[in-house]
Length: 268
Image 1 (cartoon, one colour):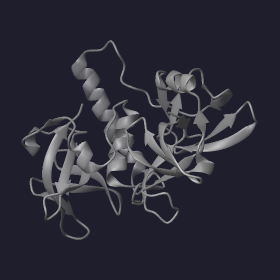
Image 2 (cartoon, one colour; image 1 turned 90 degrees about the vertical axis):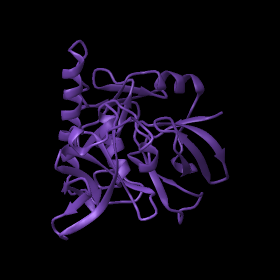
Image 3 (cartoon, one colour; image 1 turned 90 degrees about the horizontal axis):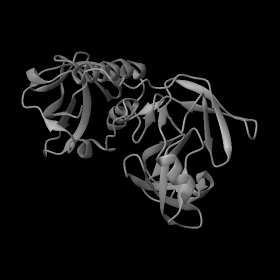
């Protein structure tokens, strides 16, 4: 098996090996993958973070050997917290912009070493909840961080398959926010709905719990994050905050319910 890593700002992942195919997700800088299949122009990959599969162009593929892959997957990974920050490849003297939510595997003292190249990152990284404090306080801190970080994406436009502040979908939005808290969520809303424990009543839900919504056929097609018991932040047209009750999301601009509440899950 071959292995790779994203050393570009963003790589689109396609459903099929074609530029005309829909983008199903994106790989951000520093995210690792396994190679599933190759053609003359395309590489089918499986992302390490969420096991999601899709095709990236061969010219955007960066292969690494197995020992390097094992080293990087086993190392502590920081997550970038600046909207956009420059990353300097000190080995080649090239500069690369990286976006909010990117990965820095093996990050230490503002540096990462990948495939023999040393990168300097002088921006902010996610501060995970401190260890050594009582678990209830640590959990509260994680929840607060998720809600606060969600505000960084306010008004980001909806983009099918997107995972950045310049275009993001509903499940990509919650996945990246949980990634910042060092918690792995799957990629799509219906997959994320299989994780965590069920919360029976909205009155029992807490900030940062996940809310899932379904269509007329009962298929889960939307997800958002509870900010308090009457508000949700989610990506629908754009990342926005709307009112919430046991029926679902009420859009004040449209003056109607837009999403029917199906399920509440707690992952933290």
